[in-house]
Length: 240
Image 1 (tube, rainbow, N blue to C red):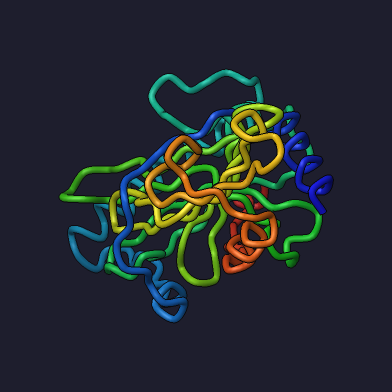
Image 2 (cartoon, one colour; image 1 turned 120 degrees about the vertical axis):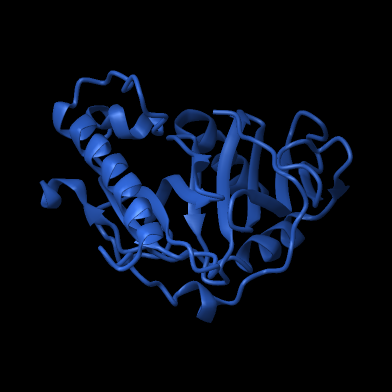
């Protein structure tokens, strides 16, 4: 079993960059609340129209990047590199989803992709999440090939990433309306302890220095608590 997880860490090193750290958690939202998604009604009220226009601008700009397909970062947008380097990744179909994923009454705009089997659990990857807070557009998260985010059935957001051949992490966040807050992280750090490389932390996404050592079995059970789901992305290619 240990060999299996070492192989997984090596896989992350090959295909998945270093990852970011967030603060401590708040209460976890229920799955029922998560899936009460309400798309933004046009021309219903001034606030909804403003949000709709900002999201429409982002969707149009991301679509242009994918259609242009030249690998150049857009000058006025901070999209994930996956969006403007899509020609280098033929596996995923990139798209967008508008939904209230934290249940606070404000819709989020999510950019992501899914592979050949969109019905497979964990096959939909999130690369960007935007929301509106106090009238301002907020870029909540930015993922890439080796720093992937997933939506969990329990309403949390998971991250899988790696900082090297012997270091990877599996982290789980609460989205509180404008930022991610770390709930817990399972860390694989073979450089810190080659014989017992698994750690658990509630304060750091990837640093095992002050994390608690755990067994491989305990690490597996922690990760199995978080079942990934597949947001229904609208492909940019089908929306031109």
